[in-house]
Image (cartoon, rainbow, N blue to C red; front, side, top):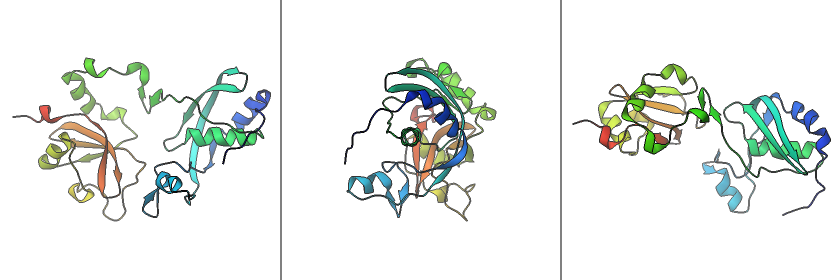
Length: 214
């Protein structure tokens, strides 16, 4: 159902933004990829039902109001991993006795990595790949998993990997689906991704089949 409300009073935006700075509980959006009873929340929502989502504790370190235009605002946000910016906009709109949504979203940093330091794929060199593997100190948000040569070869080709193929994972609890993992094999950074139930969900393969060696 779509409803119409009056635009928010942007003269109050600074005060409301400060209310959403710090650590608080947030309700993820219905169309998120969170698992609910073995199904993705977005799949449940698309079926016409409401997923039973639990609150998540998130931290917003800083809001910076960049610009305002009639009923639009540009905001720069520094937040913890797992924060849903679209839910943040929704809740800010509600606090303003109105409604809000995200019309454009750009991630400018992930941990210590800045978009200004990004390199286009065509400009990426083999030496930079090795530099990444040698710079784990810059990856505090990643959980590093060492894998065997056989599993490393599978990962280089983007193949299916199960948690039981990675001995360093805790067998007592399933991996956190929101925690990124870095696979290291044969001394190289192979791939970054998350554990989606019983398989590794690749976000990036850093060493492809061409780098597998002779």
